[in-house]
Length: 100
Image (tube, rainbow, N blue to C red; front, top):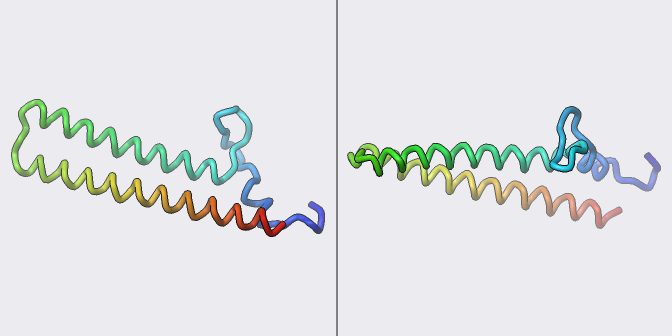
């Protein structure tokens, strides 16, 4: 690493061991973070789908509807958190790149 390269910027785009991106190359930690958020949101969406299928199957009790409402609120919160964290880190990486 030369003296002109910001070590924090290099760390941001450096590869994570044993992590692969979609193109088969090593993934950066930012890419791994985005992938983790995606998997988490997919899991919550699957949970909501299962609850919706139960509702369509006749489970229209207030407790089940309340559970679905809570799941939807959780999904909204998680989606907003994913967006905010990815956007904040992306902005920070952009700022570091400009200061090079």
